[in-house]
Length: 202
Image (tube, rainbow, N blue to C red; front, side, top):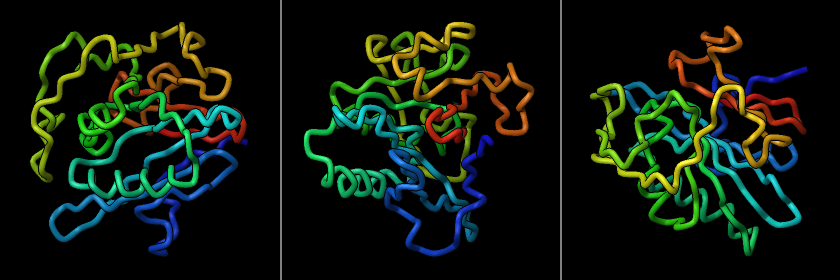
């Protein structure tokens, strides 16, 4: 059975917020509060240990801009338990600001890390500057301009998903190819099936 890891299934206990919790073997989730005026919305991001023997990790999405410092605290606390770790990739599911908010800081902090996105999502490619408030969101603060060099981009192409280095562990799924528009409203959105646990992250 495949499970959709939805933030709406989270318990309300504060224990599950602002830290990475192992929800399945080698699969961790951290949840942050996205504030819209008086309202709060849970935003989940994921860490996956794709090579436990070599301590290689992948981060899926980066939370919203207002939670950058909390994300870095959570990463620091998590990786303090895993010396000599390598955070190799950031995988973006789509370009909404609550998924892309910490890209610039993460790329600065981890000089060897690369950004993985689906081919139709070209908003960060070709060395172009783009406005950090993707889709002109006005409800939170933003990073400003984002610049990503082409040599730090890994583009997943439709029909060639198996070329992704960790395809056997994390299978990219283009939402539009499977009539799963209910998961996301971006044509270039990618979900990732974690094969060892049959969990989908989107």
